[in-house]
Length: 338
Image (tube, rainbow, N blue to C red; front, side, top):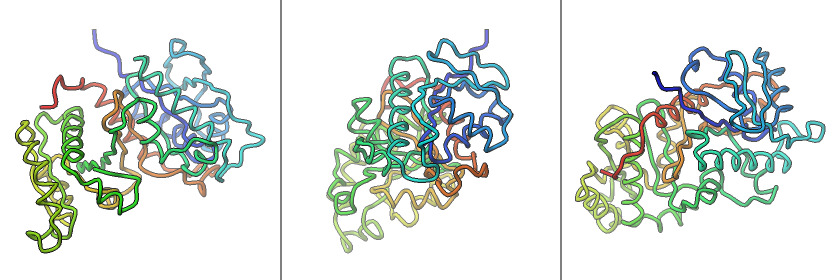
């Protein structure tokens, strides 16, 4: 008997942004039929309004538990938290009411995944400002998920077409990011990257590591961080059986990975990796959180407040995120890191 597609929880993101609209658009596409069994974690009224904005002709089925989902063609199951007052919500603006609702969607979906009730979660964009104004002081999804899952070492990978880029640090100042370039952290990210790429269908991932300084230090001429911190981490990873190479200059390593020489690249800090991935187009990229006990993928773009309510939002990044989460769910976590 063929196995069922994985059950995924999709969060609305910030209800004042375009998250609800891109969910409506994405789940109406024939290309997602059979990819997964989706449940939207959000607010029924917000989704009803999103259908009106987009003109999508899906029916909505409100549920209070995953077991109530029908997964019928043309019908969208919504785990209704009923936590948005549409009369008070400021569409297209930073609103603490929206920040609170977005937090509750992520928490609910994460709890479902931790309990094994869904195979993974796919998140729409949240506003860091709205989240913090609502009293939830996180740097975004990564920090929030790390706390909910009790996984302090979690980090971010961006996937755009064939390019996969993980990060030693993300939402910290550049000065702090430099301080975090240490062998133990780099080694941890290499292990997480290796495991994640295996779950994406690559049996023996080839990993490239970027340098921190221009030209990867040019033999110490432009800095010695590569020799002191990065090279020892690569050597240890190789001793553990990982195919890790580098450090390579940051201005060429991502191009080499995109050309197929490597299956993933490790960036030393946020913008080093993000610029490379987002040059390929934010509407096709996916954000993946590594180091969690659950699968989590996300859109690569923000809330796009300026597009909220217009029905013109682009669902391509969400479609990619759903497909990637389904792929990862179909590949069990390796029993070991090598």
